[in-house]
Image (cartoon, rainbow, N blue to C red; front, side):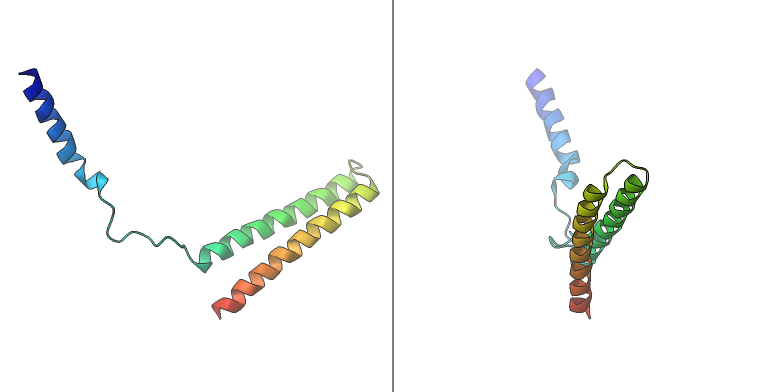
Length: 95
């Protein structure tokens, strides 16, 4: 009797969970496309701008020496330029 109840319970769980086990037919493609790339690059650009402003603020408040600030600023701006170039390339590809 116990085995019958377990078998019926297992069959009910299997039947009820069938929709959860199937993959949707209209599943999104693996590659989200260039729009997602643009969003990521724009977020990276904004974050880099914040880092530049934070470094400037730290220098103005005396938390950073001038040589350290110059080096940090140069590196951050170089990274920002790279991000902006990548954004420009994606924009050119989309046109």
